[in-house]
Image (cartoon, rainbow over all chains, first blue to last red; front, side, top):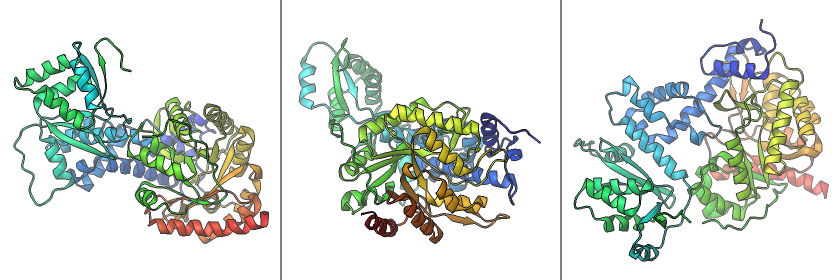
Length: 261
Length: 288
């Protein structure tokens, strides 16, 4: 019979029991008409249910693509291999894409990890900080200045380049409509951001993606322009900036060398 | 955009509020139902921004608000999660809720979170830890914190005191408020075979700041029936009776109807709150 455990030992044993790792917890639980393992199982089921439901909510397109049974089995395996590390469930599930990429049963769906990546970014965009868009006239005046600008983009903006037609697949998964999914094999580059209360997504051409990605990591406008031109000699920087302004995605600027206000 | 000027705290009235869940938010914002106060889960607002904050701004402008946490894991042998506490503090500063609470439980060990309200052993060691943690939270928030008794489906052989002794002693020593979940008292009295009335009698009268009511389900596929705190049903008749007894003992206390699983139409929650309100009303008249 195990001696009375210290609190840390008890909690480690309890966690082992409910995460199917065995352990001593059954010896510490009073049965009172029910087996200690049956009592621990009530908790094991509740914990699994909560965590799997969280993944269901975060990954609706993955779920639609693989079906409920497959999803539940994948989620059940994921939560044991990548245990939750925060008390806030919004933080749970960030490694699901990488996990799916290593799952042999999912290998036939090569695009699945990117769909999961997109859904995680959708959640990040939904929860990101708020920011007020820059007035286009203010930016226009700053552009007349000779020194190169560095733009601050909206905190909710995320980019994802995929070798698969990712946005097409995601939209099909969420709302299949009548048609079958036609994949032409071309990859898509997706921009996503929060627009009002919802997450908006758009496919980007290679040059716009290269330019916005450069801006997002803090390159100045000249360097970002060069990235766009490297991807496509006909890249139109003004059009790219106009669409960012139209979507309220530029929130501040600095002249090179200054820190953002 | 939210107003940068600090909000004044609106105290939670001694009336029956409801736990506001996301599916009811659009109707609440559009129709502004007559509800004396709302409670929401703190962790839902741990993101920096987004639609949910915009909604909370609007709820907060028109109703007293209580923030109720489920993820602080106060009773864990791990250190308190500093980032969690910092985020909670920022949230409390931003929204100035009338009440702030979490549970008498643990949820994480060795950095692994189980995201559930797990039972503590009722030992001196666990009590000392909980007292320290609650004081730490009250110091960090600069205000009174409420702790809630949880439902449980097991007890530990090496318990050194009863649950009600543990709860009463925690509240007394930590100098915090008590969020008394009357449904959880009833559920545990059935699951562990104790006297729910004795539990209520042991609670420190002056510390009861809020009462929770919810529905349980009965798990019948086990050797003994177990009540599960599912928040999926109307409040049980036995729990209403215990609630009336609690009000007789503690006076009219802010009361919350909680419903999380199988969420019904808002009207069902309003009707449950109406029932609690009728019981509160009798005591208010008596108190006046």
